[in-house]
Length: 233
Length: 233
DNA sequence: TTCATGCTTCGACCGTAATCGAAGCGTCCT
DNA sequence: AGGACGCTTCGATTACGGTCGAAGCATGAA
Image 1 (tube, rainbow over the protein chains, first blue to last red):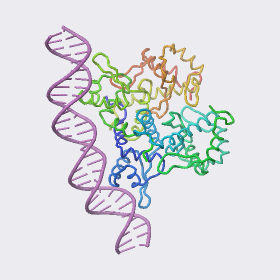
Image 2 (image 1 turned 90 degrees about the vertical axis):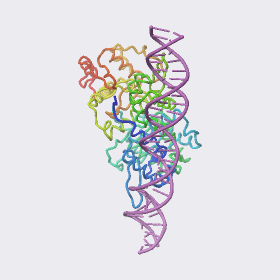
Image 3 (image 1 turned 90 degrees about the horizontal axis):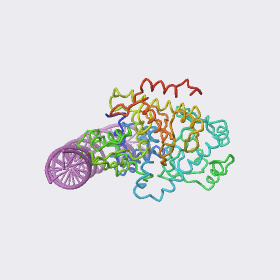
Image 4 (image 1 turned 180 degrees about the horizontal axis):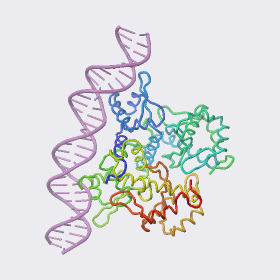
């Protein structure tokens, strides 16, 4: 029979613990050097080098050379989404890496999903924006409505600044901890950057976790809280 | 660091070619016996037994004993969705199992995705129904609108017949060949069964492919074609 | 009961792939 | 220059896991 695309080739790549750890690390969206990824995988540089080569020829990651460093990133948003899907399955059964680390609650509250906001806060934001009619929902795409454009404008977020890549402006991404959608795409990326620039949230070193500052928490609730103008839920 | 759930355990399960083939075979939605799966994987029964055990303790499949047979199925729709996501990545790069088989075009036109209709026809149906306002789209769920209920009624599809499981009535599922959503959930399952019962489409033996009968093609176009009453697109 | 079938467990074999030491090649710094 | 650093290639070792034969245990049929 052998119908459809070959799953196993890709899955075997992700299936090695060392490579899995590397990919998880890259889910922060940060570009990491080969040696950083080596320590992430818990091995020597030469082992890591071999793994990275395989991941790259497998189409899961890409690199660009800069000086004597090689910076690695995930190859595409599609890869990130597939990894999140896998995390969703893994989180459902079996614990979070045998025992749920102390950092786990923080991850569920807010974290980075490649380049945009995920976790409870990410879902909250998306729900609120959707409920207030900021999106025009067509069968295959998600676009900003006029109200959405106004809202983004009030945030002082200049959309013209966004790179004019072919990537869609808005996109849904399924959250592994919440099992609901949050906002991805160029806008999702821009909004996370915006929050970080204003110090409303900042990254925990060496983790995907995001921490909200007191100021950030206040602002975020004002923008996307339950008792916001048009009434979310 | 070691953030989030452990991807590798699951991915390694899928990563073995024998197990990958078994899972692909189960994507037809049919329950298969251990020996059938053994031949699917191209190995002996005792090897298959070991694989099936691992897949089951890994939470990817489930079985029920019947007489002296053991029937295996995918553990949940979530598993099926994750597998489709992996297929999406694999289909993007690298060919469909090294050389695209002759059955590939048929698969892209219409196929079974675990228990519902996928492929170009699945996407077409979902687009059409969505464009005609058959769904009420809330942030997290998809429900039938009154118009949708009427439409389903005209099909002589009795929703009360559907099992009252906790699974959602409607659900989106990302199509690996089309990279767009098609309809899953209990309704998706019911509609596929409906099409099959009326002999509008039937399954190709030992494949996920679906073939439309001449009658079925006519009916399907009448129901979901481009020039249908409310005008899709 | 006796025999066939469907499937599992046990044990041994074997191949593949992960791992690391040693060495090599660029790049940056002084 | 010289030297440190980042990373890769090569080669040898090792270990894990897939594979199958043989045997065991049920169920179903005669």
